[in-house]
Length: 288
View 1 (cartoon, rainbow, N blue to C red):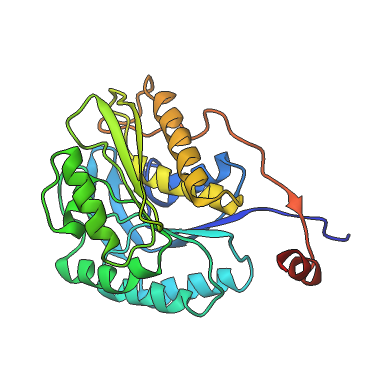
View 2 (view 1 turned 60 degrees about the horizontal axis):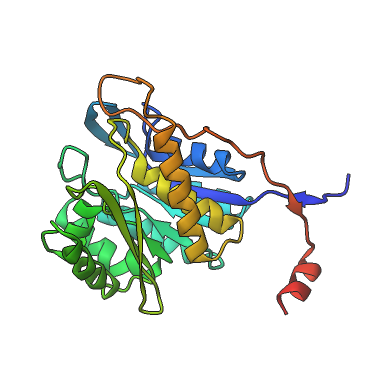
């Protein structure tokens, strides 16, 4: 049968979460809920539940490299989300392997600090992320704690967020979405620093709930999904924040586990999108 359609493909390169709320599981749920076909590369095996991370077991660097290569040689994505990269050598492997393939939008969610405040990556890893990974990404989505590590400053106010965002841009980032959910405020403010030097501010009422496990993973994956669906960057960021807010709101009244519960990723799932398939010649003509 002649192929008539193609799915929007979104890939996640991230760590495992057996509790199902964050990491690669949250990414796949989000991609699926937003009509994308999900592929995944496992970078680490944390032992965790809703109450926290107990241990982290490494996946061999060669295995990660081979996962990326075998997928990109067969099911090439429209956008890639990168999550947990916990060693400097892993950063090298991901950057070097992705450089072998055509450019695709890269969204980096710098998973550096656990909800408990525990640092998940060493200083050497942060230095390699800054030097090699951040300049390759199209958007980085740090929360307050992660931005504080990258900007090397304490962040306790909205004014601090503006300063930190500018510092992260100077590290070579193309676009920065600094999430303000960890600030002590009744209003949640996030700042988007774009590649034209503009700062966009987004505000919403902060939802009082303990079910916030995987919020950062979900937001970055939602943005990746909309980019895979050909949304412009700012539109993808706005749509991703809207989806994440609704996923939190629709999961507030559910008890899952004894700690920080997950979001409701499937509050209003979309069907898997089928776009018209274009041959290489048709695609070339479209791009002229």
